Amino acid sequence: MKKPRFIISGGGTGGHIYPAVAIANELKSRFPEAEFLFVGAKDKMEMQKVPQAGYAIKGLWILGIQRKLTLDNAMFPFKLFSSMWNSFRIIKSFKPDVVIGTGGFASGAVLKVASMLKIPTVIQEQNSYPGITNKLLAKKANKICVAYENLERFFPKDKMILTGNPVRQDLINEASKSEAISYFKLDANKKTLLVLGGSLGARRINQLIEKELDFLLSQNIQIIWQCGKLYLNDYSKYNEKENVQVVAFIDRMDLVYAAADVVISRSGASSVSELCIVGKPTIFIPSPNVAEDHQTKNAKAISDKNGAILIRESELEAQFETVFSDLISSENKQAELIQNIKKLAKPNATKDIVEEIVKLIN
Image 1 (cartoon, rainbow, N blue to C red):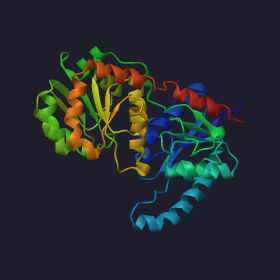
Image 2 (image 1 turned 90 degrees about the vertical axis):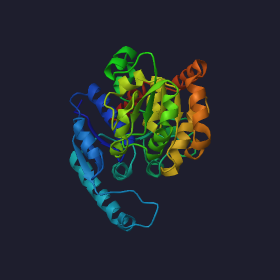
Image 3 (image 1 turned 180 degrees about the vertical axis):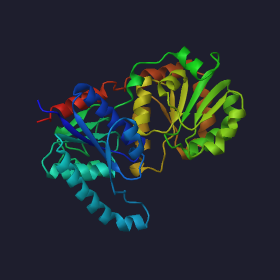
Image 4 (image 1 turned 45 degrees about the horizontal axis):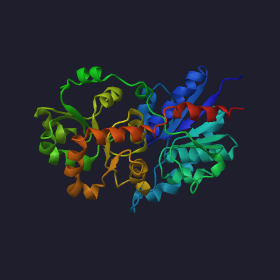
């Protein structure tokens, strides 16, 4: 068999990049001799994150359509033509066996050109409500790997496979709580609250934690607060408080999840999938500022099955303190959420997605 060649495209946010890298790693473990090329958007985080993971990447001049009238919107037709032409050149030069897209506008151009050239394509859709790019690509894709049920209204049923979302491999093998407590220098006799706002941070969650910090500490807990690199200067002063650790970014997610007793988090697709696998009592506070309000839909898919608690940003003032104190004080409620969220986990997602890709290799 000749060396398989794969183009993988996805980016803009960690939620598109980490699944792409996880898929590449699994393909590489099966085909050590395979060749890989990532394609992303110039000036986006994939241009740093993908080379850090050990893969080559090429950048396209592409950006999504903004919701308001901007110069970028006026430039969109030119950027689209440029990205399609460059995708054509990249594909003709690299000659992939399969092209895989994990979302974002760069993946739209690459998969569109690949399907026009009759090269097999696979879409990996992370959210319970697909983005516009994947909806437009669905008809021509060979396989669509989804993380949620009931997406028939968006995608052809015969092409869909329910796989779940790829997650970091280290989360599947549970880390020990004692190692986690030692690593973060925590008090073993206190419950730990983990606050997550995504890789860049979440302004509204940071404002909430700042406002409610004295209330939270009155619950006899300790806090690991990942505020995001954009906000570290604003919130690092709270490191002076006892039982509070404010960090921009957490490298050892396996250990921080092991340390956590309760989690407050945004509900991007990767975060939701990870929390299902590690099985933590979670309060989801979705970002309302994302396309199609998909974070609320992701969180609702879990909360509707009593696997997590959903509080919308508009409800925080009225509900947060009551909801949190009820949760932190009830072992039964925590156990119930753990049991239900774990039922929704898909630990074999990456392997199952790769199985579908392998079937398409000529």
